[in-house]
Amino acid sequence: MDGTPYGIADAERDLRAALGQAPAGAVAGAWSASTMQAGYSDISGGYTDAAGHDVDAEPRNAFAAVEAAVSRLVEAGGAPFNRVEIRWTADRFPLSLLGRPGRVRVETSFDPGIVPRGPEDPAYEAAAAARHRFWEARGRRVCGYAAQDHHANIHGQTKWFGPHRRILLLRPAEGPREGAAEGAVLATDGLSTPWAGIPDPENGVACEVALRLPRGEAAETERVRLWTNILISLGDRVADGYRVARDVEKHGAILFSRLPAECAPFEYVILTGAADGAAIPDLPFGSVPLLEAVPVTAAEVAGGDPDEAWEAGTAGAALARRDRSAPL
Image 1 (tube, rainbow, N blue to C red):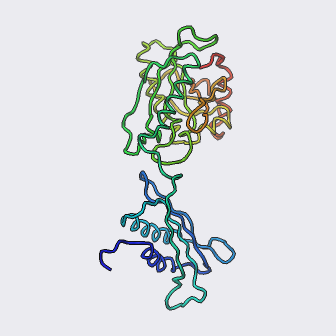
Image 2 (image 1 turned 180 degrees about the horizontal axis):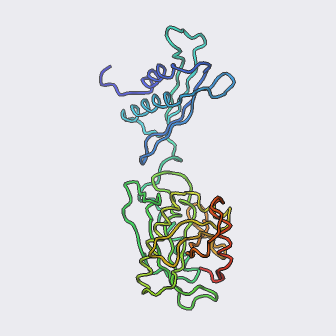
Image 3 (image 1 turned 60 degrees about the vertical axis):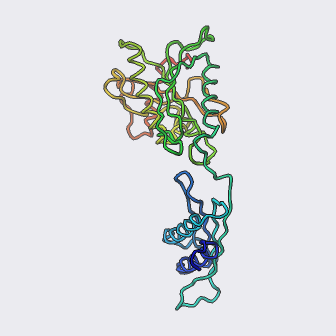
């Protein structure tokens, strides 16, 4: 009747007609859908035959019907839910003139495990505090941010998929521990922040990247500005690559990126694990490795094999000629 909110019975009626257009051989179907949360939703599932094998060559047709029904249920309001389970079973004696409408069951539920982290989730600042403690324990003073991006979207996502897209400026602490590196270090501060707007239990892209400020004729402030911009760009590429830390672990070192002309005499950056194998502990979902970005000249990586994955052999050989005994 007019004015009655769209409900489960209505969804089952609509889906019975839509899912009844099943492919030949299908005897059942199951779909699981999440509602739109922080700009993201998902639908999975499909038709199966009597042996339980997938038989749907065009799953998008069913997905579109499921998505439409879920959207109408959300718009109708009522008890909150974020997950919808749909089961279709073919009629035992299908009528060819009427298609194969079958039977449909729709169930809604609220699953707290798929609720996305909001912009104020405490996990974000817990991650930042863990990184700062890590650097202070290594004899480094956190001297503020050499760069930071405040332009996260409404879900708390920057280009690094979390609210933190920053570069730390680090200097030796007063009376540093024996063997601590001298000079300034720049480090990403946010690649290991948990994802914003989605619930996955991961520390972002599972690494942070540090760079020893190269020596040069320019004033330190100019060198900090230049290499801060470089490290922001490297962080963007690491975030886009997602599993870069895994590639570094697999190969030991990778020839990661070319550098702009203003970085001369350096022309490339190698990514490798910290010389002492350091990892940042106590993040919301465990620890992540610290990677080091090492600028190198063209001569240091000459003669490499461009067909080798990440030119890992060339990168490793170049690092072997470097003194990296002082920890970051």
